[in-house]
Amino acid sequence: MDIFTKVAKSFESQAFMKTIGASLDSVDEGRVVISVGLKPSMMQQHGFGHAGITFSIGDSAAGYAALTKMDGHQEVLTSEMKIHLMSPADGKMLKAVGSVLKAGKRLLVVQSNIFSVGEKKEKLIATMLGTMVPSIADT
Amino acid sequence: MDIFTKVAKSFESQAFMKTIGASLDSVDEGRVVISVGLKPSMMQQHGFGHAGITFSIGDSAAGYAALTKMDGHQEVLTSEMKIHLMSPADGKMLKAVGSVLKAGKRLLVVQSNIFSVGEKKEKLIATMLGTMVPSIADT
Amino acid sequence: MDIFTKVAKSFESQAFMKTIGASLDSVDEGRVVISVGLKPSMMQQHGFGHAGITFSIGDSAAGYAALTKMDGHQEVLTSEMKIHLMSPADGKMLKAVGSVLKAGKRLLVVQSNIFSVGEKKEKLIATMLGTMVPSIADT
Amino acid sequence: MDIFTKVAKSFESQAFMKTIGASLDSVDEGRVVISVGLKPSMMQQHGFGHAGITFSIGDSAAGYAALTKMDGHQEVLTSEMKIHLMSPADGKMLKAVGSVLKAGKRLLVVQSNIFSVGEKKEKLIATMLGTMVPSIADT
Picture 1 (tube, chains in turn brown, orange, green, blue):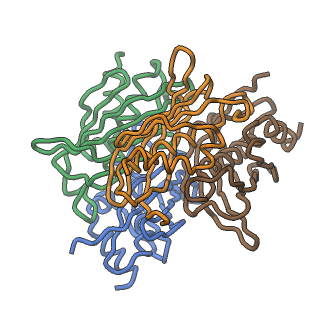
Picture 2 (tube, helix red, strand yellow):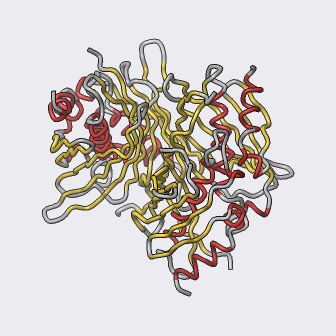
Picture 3 (spheres, chains in turn purple, blue, orange, yellow):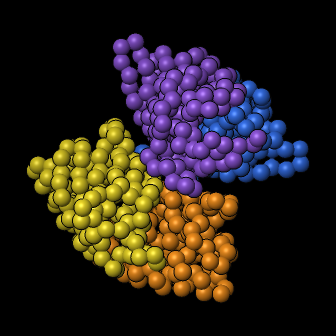
């Protein structure tokens, strides 16, 4: 099973990614892109995307970037994650680019940059930094 | 407008909190509780609640705890937030208890503890620590 | 070797703790206290203790709290650490109380609270939250 | 007063930077480099540089990078800081490169990358991400 298939299969089984309508845009070794269209149902009280949406796609993109560094049957779990929200989540779509800073045996340091995508430009709205730990797949 | 009304009004206008079915359980000065029933639509690939759900209610509870420390027309925004995921988000319900560690003029240090609530017991599944900044309400 | 002896032996071998004059005040399972007298050589540009001093004793106290949860030959390393600086590091002495939030097999979630100690009162000046990973001792 | 002079003057007044023998290597708008030679007095129990040293120069480099974005009489303080320790602090020297991710009015998001410098190569040993807040100079 190649890494795209492995990541895509796991992504398909994430009900919450489906619930918010997120899509897996690209999978390379150490780099995964996930995007989501902003809908009224995802807003916070000021009419911008809720931080939880930004966090969700950023965390998933970082986790899947880590997964591309794992052997066949291993999976990863988020141990801890930090997010800086730098601009409002506006625009039509959010796009998270997850990558791996350091792939150790017992843990991986990952990051995610999240952009709001408008008609003409992209804007960095948040950056995340965190720790993923390898785990054994259930089956 | 008392603090419960102020928080409840803002909570009502958060579409995303409504989307996931979260409820505002209690509001005290410096302490706010939000809970959400776990549904199949919120799961990640291992059948537990997605970290994004845990983050979302934890962030909102911490933000509203900060809001109880603000003057009438001020609001707050999350500047940065950290989360440690310590146990799987299982059980029937998640409950986030947000509180304020330090209320400064320019920023507030907040925390949230998130519990999974089963039939007989509660278990601490995540802890959050972050920074809220005051902002001026739109109107 | 009891936990106090194990922690004390490791503390003695930390040259940097000796350099700044830190002392190991108490060791209990899951809780370690380290203090340091503030000297002019430790100041930043505003005449308060440098954040690096606060971080150093807080990190060591948290790490040793984690060490009390380890088996005989295991040691721990800081993987990542967060610090919120809430008040200036003034007073005569800083005191760090490290503790363990969650002791897992592959990693431990730890925290530290750092107080400035004056003649009559203690004040919480910083709080830390982080991840320790077990490692095998060199010998 | 140009930014190099402003940063250098503040750096000179940081007793702790002098105590550990750190030097201010370069100052550009939004980017500051600080280095320190590793000495036996800075070690932890495994013979590597203490995390507190890495943190100290990384925090100072990030803070001064923020300072280059401030108007004449403003200074900055660290509000919160995260550090991931990715490799042991070995080599002859540590070098911290601080930069500014986002310069807002009320706070700045900063980062620092810390390298160990050996005879032939540099290695990224730690990365930091944090928040600086503007403050008014004492005089």
